[in-house]
Length: 417
Length: 154
Image 1 (tube, chains in turn purple, orange):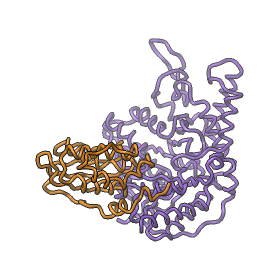
Image 2: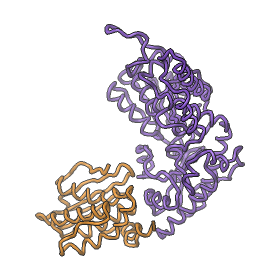
Image 3: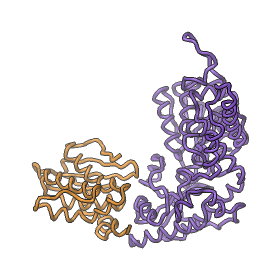
Image 4: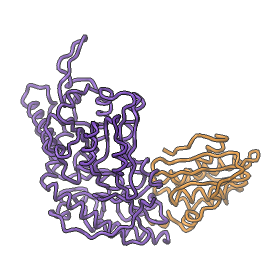
């Protein structure tokens, strides 16, 4: 099966905002002149709105939340809960459906460790796909170990997209949860999650979507998607590290047992018995990442200011451009991404290992990711030890792609191929 | 930094056309090496005759640095005693991490020179593990005897 496709595409129309101008809002570029940053899928750079907004919060409004009766604490609490509302609005959810977590990884682990034992029994099946990041594989393997559930893997098809025929076939009466990525981190494949949710719900299964690569790149409406759980990480969408969110459809959180105990998640505690808070608070034991949540809200406001559709158009434009430009270089092949690739391009250069490429690119100030991208099962499936991935953000430009292509040609020259 | 310091002609040549790149059917020692960070995999085969390396080969998939390093290593340790191979490993390790290996005994000095093309790795800390994977695997093959557990550089 040939999963390495030669592609040609026509560059799309120009985006609604000027990425060149937007770079002024990202101090990293002024501090690192010449930097060609093409690793946003690993983590995005931060705009002034987030960097300064966080500093302002610490300067003016900071105190612990949900505790103090004094006004400063009330103000901090108000900012923290407003951040939850911002996340909810961004996803078209309700604030009571949003749990702050460290990131998508913790969100998936929360569902696996809380919802899992409460709703799954031995022999039940969790479906994942070959496109998954390790974070959407390992928590389910741990649950398999603990509960005796089965992990069923939906394969990719010849184009690198999710094999929907196989998916429909593998969905069965024992399928209790489908946990798949919304946009694949290695290939940028946009997964047809609406169809997946519909089919899964018809089969009586819940659906968890990993939105790590989707939230930074396209408008996400959890109501329209109809999924039961949705997770994403703040640092990939221009916010701080250490914060992310879990969306759980109304009613689900109240039916799930706590997974970590401590302060803030309880209603009453005595040594005989403790009663727990409802909804999100039940899952936020201890002092939360207050500033992280506020930084995340600032980042999402920044994205809202640009517009979800404009961001998507920009990412699509650069993706099409990179497909066309890389596709024109002899000896370069792209890792297939099914019907639609967005925001990331994984590629191979004949005769040059991705790690050699990344070292050579670095000498040209081109920052890319080389390796297995925390998706070893997918690499095995593709029969590749590693790939080189270029990924885009709102500050990425066609000139960045041109620099990448020039670096590829320089590497080929150095290696004599 | 000149990329040519890292990718010298001899490195590129060994990377493209690795020597002793085959399964050693009469091996009596082998080990698998794996760098989980980048996915590089190497298997080192040895036929030991007493404490002498009577034959050595390798197989696997890796970058130019790890392939060239494995290739050069097999050429150099062939016919050496285990003690000599160990001395060369120590020298090489110091060369790629500190830039300078300890002085070698006169009869190994020439072998040390042959490893010099990889000294450029020192300027690229992220690539040290690529250069040393084969040597770590050789070490494991010697110590582990027959079928040993995979060696990891992470």
